[in-house]
Length: 295
Length: 278
Image 1 (cartoon, each protein chain N blue to C red):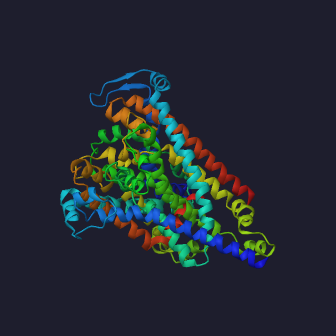
Image 2: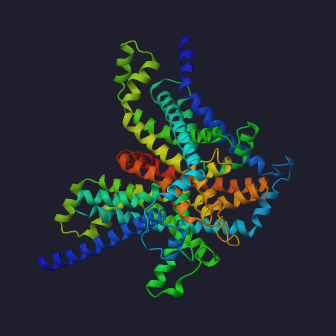
Image 3: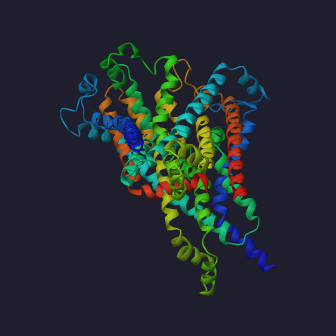
């Protein structure tokens, strides 16, 4: 009896974390499902049950689909640059003989990931700016003046320009993590391969790639999950415009709820986002589980 | 054969270095441009974007400071400090309970707390707004403190737990032999042993809080409670034509975290690496 009491008292260690996570992380998730069945004006407070209406509207909403498409584009480009590109870059840095230069390069590439996306987004807003932006100035200076354009101001280039900024901001982060993974590979393996006459390219494909496979999987998942939660850089650079061409799920949710005062609809978008991120998280769990079995 | 190989090797090295250095320029130049623009006048900025400032005065920095950046910075510092302390201690408590105390439902509780890692903040946005309005905490400092703490507990607990689980059992037994209660053992023995991972979690939490935008933008308005990431966008819309002042504000927001990264690089890298794949 006393032992049971003692064990139960031990729960005090976990209760603060449990309460905070329960009330502010899990509870809203459940409520969100309920809210997505309402037509709800947050300012007047009027609520009306509408069943799955918000979801049917979602299916018919072209901006929802183009937002989803933008997130998918974001994911594909980010996986190319921040997973495969970063892995290649990390291996290239490891090829530098001086340790000091290796450290310096990795640190320099990481700086954009340390600053906020707001600062990075505003910075590139100015870089893309048609009149004072150095991008158009540089294009004109090298005789490519006809390429100079309002990068963020037209539908054809706005989304790609934001995605390009995001690659600039994020590649150093994944490069750094790949570098850590590569350094964990015992150097004897590389030494033995070099003695056997395997060249640098061969060593990359036959040793580095297979031995950092798990990190590659995790980075792909983290990148994918991040690509569907994009919000900050779009809000700062275009706020979803021009003509909704750069809306992503996060900004469309914001606009539907907080600007157009249609919170039930926003909750329905959140549910879609929840399903996507949960699926990605389950994939992550699967990758880490599999490793434990292998070891 | 050997000379041909090394000749090719030299060519390859030249290309490698050219690429790595070019990439470094692509990263550094925009940041340098941002910093230099903080010293320019509007006319200089619109003239030749590549020119150096004519007069290295801190006038724009002073203007930015007086036009709200001092308020945003104060709020950012306060939110960062308080939520870091709250998150790290609450997470360390939880990690201690989950790894070194015999509690009921241990596995379930671990899954519940760490499971929070899988949930995106955007998904909870609408209900959270309603919840904070009901609590009367909407548009207050408390909203940010609570949200930053609650949403970072899973990640922070994950890191500290992974570290605590590897500490030898004998440590607790020795503490018990000395007659130390759980409370004393936690503060005097276990927590000091976790210093490296605590440093990592503190630094990562600072980086997160300092840069966070989604919650800050939705839950605060008005300069008294806005943090830097949101404050900068207000600075931009309010003083839209005076761009050099905005650049100065951006530098003020970026500098502390860049310095922090260079000072605490080792711990930050360790925390990030463990956080993704331990």
